[in-house]
Length: 65
Image 1: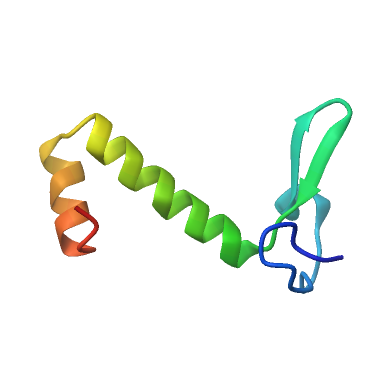
Image 2 (image 1 turned 180 degrees about the horizontal axis):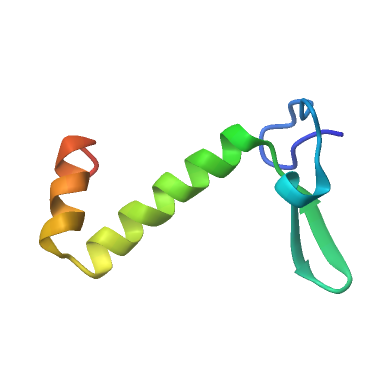
């Protein structure tokens, strides 16, 4: 099974961990590395949209903002 984003083979594929169900008729397989990258990107977006002291502190340590 290959990751839809990076096209690399997903090691130890598990449908519960690697399958993103968009709706009843659409789903994609994503590797854990791309999931981590997506979550970091999403955290940066939320920290920008809803700046709190904790989010700013986390982002400044990661040099994201």
